[in-house]
Amino acid sequence: MTDSPLFDTPGPRARRRMLWMNIVGALVVAGIGFLVLRAFAAKGQLDADLWNPFVGSRAWENFLLPGLKDTLKAAGISIVTASIFGIVFGIGRLSRSSLVRRVSGAIVEFFRAVPVLLMMIFFYLGIARLHVVEPADLPLVAVVLGLTFYNGSVFAELIRSGVHSLPRGQREAALAVGLRPTQSLRLIEVPQALIAMLPAIASQLVVILKDTALGSIITYPDLLDAARRLGSGDGNILQALMIAAGMFIVINYALTRLAGRLARRVGGRTAGRPRAEAPGLAVGPGAT
Amino acid sequence: MDDGYLQQYVSLFEEFDVIGAFWVNIQLTVYAGILGLVLGTVLATMRISPVPSLRWAGSAYVTVFRNTPLTIIMVFCVLGLWGQLGWTLSPDFTTNFFRFAVVALTVYHAAFFCEALRSGVNTVPIGQAEAARAIGLSFLPAARLVILPQAFRGSVAPLGNVLIALIKNSTVAAAAGVAEAAGLMKTMIEFRPDVILAIFLTFAFGFVVLVVPVGMATTALSRRLAVVR
Image 1: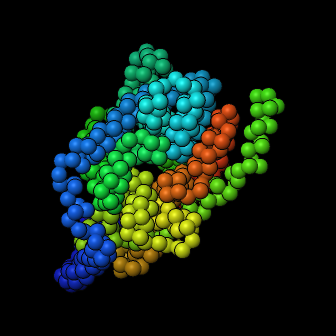
Image 2: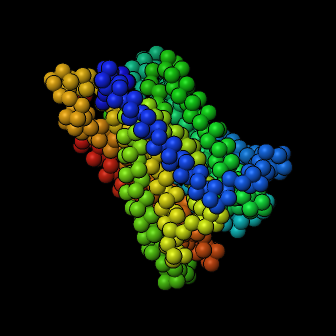
Image 3: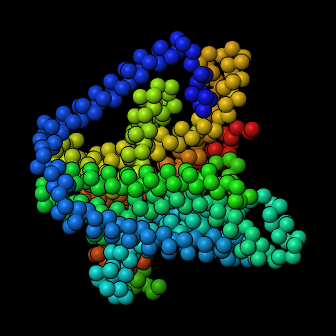
């Protein structure tokens, strides 16, 4: 308990009391779990024929794995495009020209404030009118564009705050050895900011992966959509959605752990402070 | 933009209740915000308590719901709890879906409220607690007078970010069939595809107007309340 400021290391009496609280707490948690299970059992939701489909290969081969593939595809493309968007506008926000800085700033702030679903619906219906992509690819393009503009803006903000949190000496030293300001930005500051933001990028991947599920609203055949189709065929939507959620949780938990490990490892390779989360619209004191 | 375009665009507002749709988003945000903050506070208390079973349950909740897409929770509530289990939260059809959307938003954002509050506690240096004990304060006075006031100040900005995320995520209620802004935008664009850009910008700026003041207010508040260390 030494990691929390609230509690002192417990003595023998506190330890005995904690043992009792622990038992009571465990019983309460187990009781809630039992009530949920009983509510499910009362409706026959634990019956084997509702869960059996997920043991066989049919559900996985025809629905869940193709759905997961499409989810990962949309997320993968979005990560690449959002990174490009983020680097372009992140450097734009650090530009020496105040016009470039302001325009990039306005774009980044705008896309961080607009809901991703709104953008996806707009691109889905808007690009359909332009007839520039195959109708079959339309949902994928709309999902990728929506995710790119939002997460690209988050990346841009990360680069900006990453560069600003570097010690001033980095830039001063670069200028002192004869680099021009743009060279200092490109060769010294942005690379270190990128390394410092690696953990935050890894946790942003979780956001991208979760937001691909919004694609199911605009008919993108992602994991959620696959689970829904699978469940409506067998009458076990509840169970199918729980399996899909479980798949998301496993992947995202692994990504979160990766972000934590990265945060500990990259510390020595940058003069900046590694941060684990992307900055939001509301920033605390001391943030740059 | 000629007169015809502008006129067509303005005529849309007579046909559709844009303000009403945004009002639904605001209501979703307020209800889910209050309930989520209550649930999040309970979870945060569990996570910082010295009792291992409660700590474990709190972090299990956060891990599960923070890593599940909100859309899945929303669809789960409507198709699973209502469609398959037959649960209803209100005899009225529209209210029923609205309440399910509030439940989904609450359950999801409670995990984030919990983490925001917990991160506030983590900003308090351990020396503060040691100093509180050294001057003779026992657990409750130390928590009330020294630790928690600093913890709340430290969690203003993270809480503001969760609130902003909640405002934006209230559009996901469209997946539960709630008549809110994102759904109305889709209907309006399908009805009048020739002014699609104007319609999108209207709704987008509506959210900018809702979100940016919250961001600025919480930023200013957290700077004002900042604990100088």
